Each structure stands twice: as C-alpha cells, then as structure tokens.
Picture 1: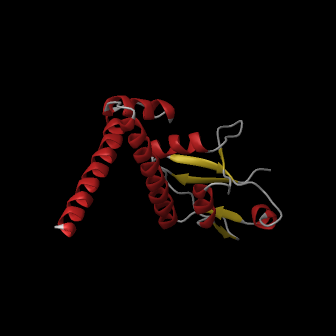
Picture 2 (picture 1 turned 180 degrees about the vertical axis):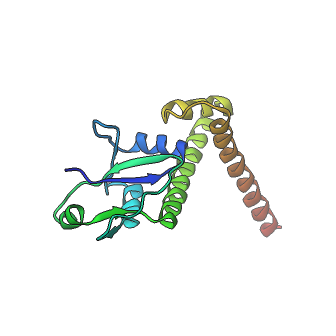
Picture 3 (picture 1 turned 120 degrees about the vertical axis):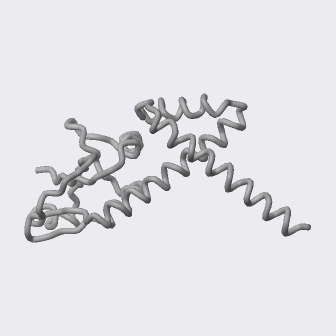
Length: 162
C-alpha cells in the first residue's frame, strides 16, 4: 500500500518537480530525500492519529512517500499531511530553487549569445511548462529582477571604490 500525500503547488512549479523527480505509473511524484526539495518537503510532513479534514486545492499535486525502516510505523498507522503554512514554505522554497536554476540557465544562455526569447522558449520546453503568457512573463520577470539586482550590486561596488 502506497502512502499518498497531496499538496497545493503552483502549476509551473509542478512541472519543475515533474522534471526533477521520478513518477509512478499513476503520475504521482515519488518523493525522494536525495534532493534539497525532497528534504524540505519531508521536513514539513506532519502526522496525526485522526484523518484530517479534506482541504480545497487549487492545483493539487500528489506525492508518494516511500516506506523505509525509519518511517514504516508512521506510514502504516498514522495519517500524513502538510499544514497550510507548511505548503506555503514548500512553495516558497521550490520557487527559490526554480528561480536559481532559471538564473543559471540565463547566465549560460547569454554567454552563448542567445536572445532572451530563445532562452525563455528553451526553459519552457525543457521543463514542459505550458507556453502561455503567464508562464512566459513569470520567467521573463525572473530575468529582469536578476538583471536589476546585478546592476544595483555593480553600482554599490562602484560607490564603495570611489
């Protein structure tokens, strides 16, 4: 018997997770502790003797929590869930990891003289993110913020040397 845990995750982050983790035959993400994201999600899993009331999800993502000797009892005899505050922390962490990955891809793309549009389209294709205006603008904004912060750091370095 599998232990399934459902969390509300933003759609573009769901695609990122599907790229980073393996899935089972039903499309559930297999939650592994081998990555930082897996560790942070495991850290926010709570257990209860009573079944928690069903939550309303705008974008539910199901995870399979693998059984091991350390969690066998909890997975067998208790109910697992993540609190709303825990879901927000998980989304924030995954968003930060995603933005860091995107920043790195932009740096590499610009070093190869690619245009911003080419890099964004490559990201959308690699992570199988639906190419809609929202997702395109989300990635474009991440690049814009990075460039703005980079300019601010350059200005502060120049000011400190003058």
